[in-house]
Image (cartoon, rainbow, N blue to C red; front, side):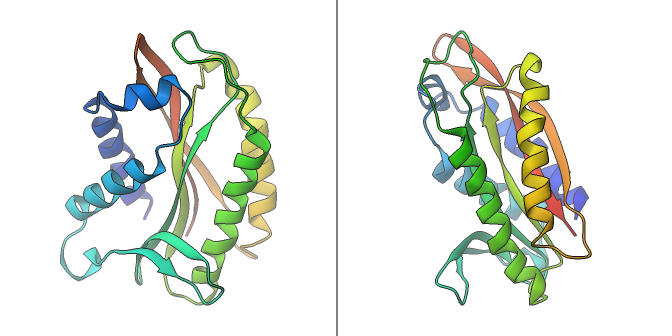
Length: 187
């Protein structure tokens, strides 16, 4: 499964570079989860073929909650776009509540744990983009990631969440900004 996530990260990164309209969202620190869901689904269809390529969007759980993308028997993904408070030259200075966004990631892991517990999938991941996130902010960001790992591991007893990330460049109206394409993954 890790190979699928690695390939998905590379594919999504290529799509980010090819999407000039994304600059407006990044410059304003706006969410673009819908766009991320469209390209993630599209790229998964390219990566996987055959019976395992069945994709269900907004997969209904028994609890009236939904999981963004489920490939039954294989993989479940909850997507997240995290707009941080970190300063960046081409991004508007807006205060974003990072605490609530981090709680959202933990809540996504809780939903994913239901599918794992029921053996509906082999692996689960919270998959997303965090921006702006310059290299000088990585240590501070890792504090948030560690909090998510501690909280998230409670939902996956006997398993361990892993964090993988790739530094990316996101377009801004007047340049580009660093960010991370990340996955909190459990197999």
